[in-house]
Length: 154
Image (cartoon, rainbow, N blue to C red; front, side):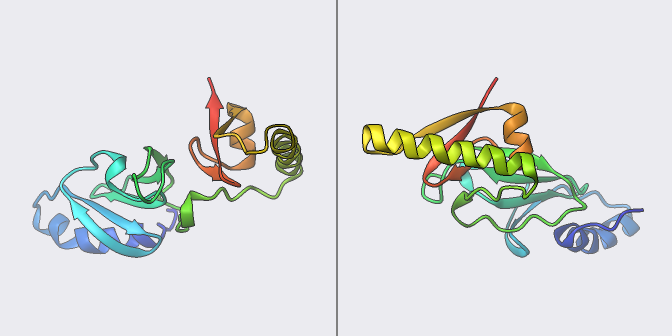
C-alpha cells in the first residue's frame, strides 16, 4: 500500500477513533501546505479559500484550490493525489516541470510575452494553451505566470 502524504496521514490519525468506534464523521479539513487552517462540513465554493489551499475529506480524497488570487479567492478545485505532498503555492505562481518539452513550451511562452509587451506596452491578461501543453508544463488552468493567467483551450 502506498504511503499517504503528510495531510493524508494527519486526517487518517484524526479519523482512526471514529472508524474504530463505528461512528461516521463527515468533514473537510483545509491546509495551507502542511499547516491546518480550517475545518468545514463540506468542500464548498473555492472562492472562500486562497489559491494553493489543500482540502482533504474524511475519506481521504484531496483537492487543491487553483486560479484566482488571495484577495478574491480561488477560481476552482482540482483533484490531486493523496500520495503526493502539495506544496503551498505562494501567489498561485506556476511551478513548471523541468523536462525538455516543458522548457521548450516555456521558452515559446516567454517569447510571446516579450513580443506582446514590445508591441502593446503591457502584458496580456491571459494566455490560452492547449490542454496537452498545460499538462506537459505541469500547470493548472487559472494559475499565474509572470502576471499572466494561463487558460486552457477546449
